[in-house]
Amino acid sequence: MLQVFKFGGASVKDASSVKNVASILNKYKQTPLCVVISAMGKTTNALERLVNAYCNKTENTELILEDIKSYHFNICKELFTNENHKIYTELENIFLEIHWAIEDEPSSNFDFEYDQIVGIGELLSTKIVSAYLTEIGIKNLWIDARGIIQTDNTYREGKVDFELTQSLVTKEILSKFSEFDIIITQGFIGGTSENFMTTLGREGSDYTASILAYCLNASQVTIWKDVPGVLNADPKWFSRTKKIEELTYHDAIELTYYGATVIHHKTIKPLQNKNIALHVKSFINPDEKGTIIQNNDKRLNYPTYIFKINQVLISIQPKDFSFIAEGNLSEIFDVFSKCGVKINLMQLSAISFSVCCDYNTDKINHLVQTLQNHYKVLYNTDVELMTIRYYTQDTIDALTAHKVILLEQKSRYTVQMVMKNEL
Ligand code: ASP
Ligand code: MG
Image (cartoon, rainbow, N blue to C red; front, side):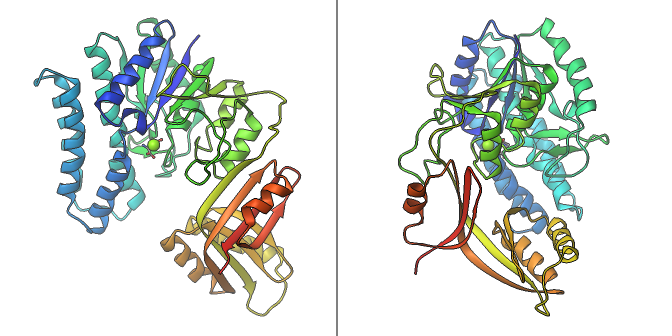
C-alpha cells in the first residue's frame, strides 16, 4: 500500500544525512512511496535573510546568495564523485533564476517576493536527493510541487484548492506509480493559477505530506524527525520528557493548536478525515517505533506541556470606560485580522478585553497604534504562555512557582496561563 514520507531540513542538512535518507528509503523498497522533502538544514532562514536584504536593502544580497550556493555545492561535492554531474548545471540554473530576480527592483508586495525566493530551498534539496538516489541505483521520479499543490494567491500562507489539487495528484502522481516506486517532491511550496510560487507557511512541509496522503488515499504518513517521536514537552524547556506512544487525532490537533511545534498545525485534519495514520519517527533510529497518531479512544493519562515564550498580553478598553459590547469585539477582531496578528488566548471582562499573542514587534506596534484610535490599550511584554493538557494541581503548582499569573483559563482537560517571572 502506498505511503507518504516526509523528511525535514535536519534530515538532509549535510551529505551524510542525505545518505542516511537514502538508506531509510532503501529499507522500504517494496512499498510505493511519495517522498516530501524540506529545504536543507537552515536554508529557509538564509533565504528569508536574502528576501529581507533584497526588499529592505539591509545587506548585500550577493554575499548571502553565495553562502547558500556554496553550502549546496559542498554537499554535492561529497555526494557525487563526477565533477561534471548534471546536478551542477541544474542547481546553477535555479541559482541563476534567483540571481535575475534580485537584480530587478522588488515590487511593493513583500509577501509575493518572499514566496518567489524562499520556496527555492525545497527545489534545491529535492533535486539533490533525487539525483543522489539515481546515482546509487534507486530509481525515482522528481516532481515539481508547484504544478500539483494549487493555492490561491495568499502569499506566505497559500490556501489549498483541494479539488484542483486532487485531480492533479491523480493525473500527475498516482498514475506514475505504475512505473516508479519512489516519487520525490517538495514540501512547503505550491503554485497559483497564474503560475507563481506560493508557500504554505513556515514548517509547512508536514502539511504538504498530509495533503498528498489525502489525495493519494495513502495507507499512512511518516514524518521522520531528529527526536524519537512526539514528546510530552519540548526538551528545549523541560529536562524530563517522555515519548508518547499513541495519540488520538483529537489530542494531536489540540496540542499543535496550542503551539506544539513538533508537527505543523494543519497536518492532522486531512488525515483524520480519511483515517490515515500518522507516524512520527526518528531518522537516527529508523527501526524504533516512534509515535502513532490515529483514531482511538485512549486519552493520555499524563500531562503534556506547551510553553511559548516571547508573548505579549494586550488589554483593550473603551476610552470612555463603558462596557465592551459585541460591536466593539467585531471591530477589534477586524483590526487583528487586518494586522495579521493571531490570537493565542483571549478573555473578556466587563470593562476590558485581554488578548495574548506572539510578540512580533512590527505587527504588534501596528496593531496597538490602530486600536488606540478608539480604545485605551495597555500591554505587557516578556510574558509566557503555558498550556497543560491533562493537568493536575501538582503540575500547575510546579510550573507556576516563582511566576506571577496574569491570566488563567481552565477547561476540563486543559489549563492555560499567561505568566511572568516574579521580580
Ligand atoms: N523549509 C520550510 C521551513 O523551514 C518548510 C519546512 O521545513 O517544513 O519553514
Ligand atoms: Mg524545517
